[in-house]
Image 1: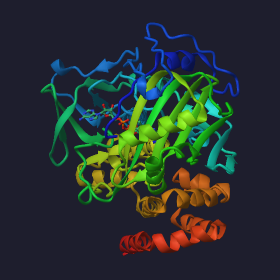
Image 2: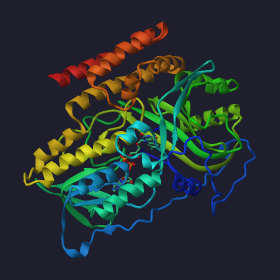
Image 3: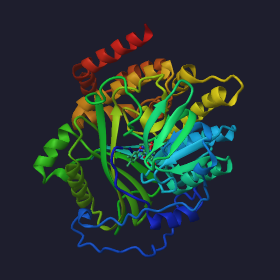
Amino acid sequence: MRALNMIQSPCPHLTTFSSSISPFLLHKPIKSTPPRRTRITRSSLKSFLDLTPENKPESLNVDLDWHDFTGGSAEYDAVIIGCGPSGLRLAERASMHGLRVCCVDPSPLLLWPNNYGVWVDEFEAMNLTDTLDKVWPLTTVIIDDHKTKHLDRPYGRVNRKALKTKLIEACASNGVKFHAAKVWKLDHEEFKSTVLCSDGKELKASLVVDASGFASSFIEYGEARKGSHGYQLAHGIVAEVEHHPFDLDKMLLMDWRDSHLGNEPYLRARNETTPTFLYAMPLDSNLIFLEETSLVSRPVMDYGEVKRRMAARLRHLGVKVKRVIEDEKCLIPMGGPLPRLAQSVVGIGGAAGLVHPSTGYMVARALATAEVLADAMVVCLGSTRMIRGKPMHGRMWSSVWSGSRVSEREFYCFGMETLLQLGLNGTRRFFDAFFDLDPYYWHGFLSSRLSLEELGLLSLSLFGHASNSSRMDIVTKCPLPLARMVANLALQAI
Ligand SMILES: Cc1cc2nc3c(=O)[nH]c(=O)nc-3n(C[C@H](O)[C@H](O)[C@H](O)COP(=O)(O)OP(=O)(O)OC[C@H]3O[C@@H](n4cnc5c(N)ncnc54)[C@H](O)[C@@H]3O)c2cc1C
């Protein structure tokens, strides 16, 4: 699950098997060859925190067409800032329709650092299942020591090397140009923008799209960005372990048990108010991605504490980590104000506030929205209609944030505000009722697919499924966020 900040990089070990197995070899143990040239750090098996992560940056071996600054001042239809999933998907789709696109990123070929997990149906809808390196047919949510839910919705781990290669190769064959630099500054004129780069070079385009992630410095947001955000914080590791207790055919979406904090009264008390859960993707019997996650907190939780809780949990589960192949710090701002719509630079992905405010997920939604934005770009830039300047920016922004999407987001922000109030027991009760809903609703909620009306029906149904104490939670703890959501929806309707 899940930037302002991240540490992590690709793992040669994983890369080896990722590229050599069919994506759908379910249940089959994955043969992993020992990594070459990686230092094996043996642990005294005290805690995985004593081990040095073996992360090493890796670049793709793809021939790119670099922008040629000697050939005069070429003007692009679009310059896209950032070669993350959002930027490359947009470049691929827009260039497929003949638009002239240039992507700028300090390291366009560097492998993405994040471990992405997605619902398989989301990737199926985009014909991207060939970029998943592991699929779990079932997903598990452990509410507490006595209750576990098995969800019949397959979950997949994105093979980030495969996905980036697929997108960047398609860009290269569609004629997309690349420039390796950081964008410093943008200058907008009525029908054209100039992109100033860290190497002093300039690029010109009819449209600039910001796909530089959550820490974008080019998009203006509706109000001060601080204050209304929640934050998801997680510490994740890809680890070689002696053994682990998880079924290989089940992905563990959430484990809310807290029995591991029995001997840690301080951690236990804090976990009751700001709970964290374990997210685990078992890759084989000795290889697993483990992540201790604070779903949402405000202010952001202490990172050291997340790690200490994780160490206590793994100890309790008897998981002995032999090697930390990769680690990642995941910090995702959730909710908060939307970008000011109709500004001269258009956003996509993290920069455009597309992250799901109640879950922190985004990658599938960003890839899907990039297709919609690319279509809008083609209408404005690819036709003879010559829609440029303000009308073009308006159209682009409403393809990313339509009126209905903005209203639906109010609801998801209400979901985030509710979660912020609940504490451990309330959160357990909430998910107990949530995953009892008709799958249409919980699938749709988690994948941002429900209309506002459907979200209303979901709330009623959730209230119906909830225990009495859960209903009390909603009535007593959430009136303010509820009133805020209703007021915002009323304002949008006017
Ligand atoms: C550790 C982590 C794990 C996550 N896991 C999941 C998950 O499992 N599932 C999920 O749905 N979501 C997940 N997310 C959330 C979200 O999907 C990711 O953050 C995703 O990478 C966002 O994609 P993006 O393309 O918008 O931005 P990014 O992936 O952040 O890419 C931005 C790119 O822009 C470049 N850039 C930045 N500034 C500039 C500049 N000034 N000039 C030029 N280039 C620039 C960067 O170098 C980078 O290449 C995770 C987030 C994090 C941090």
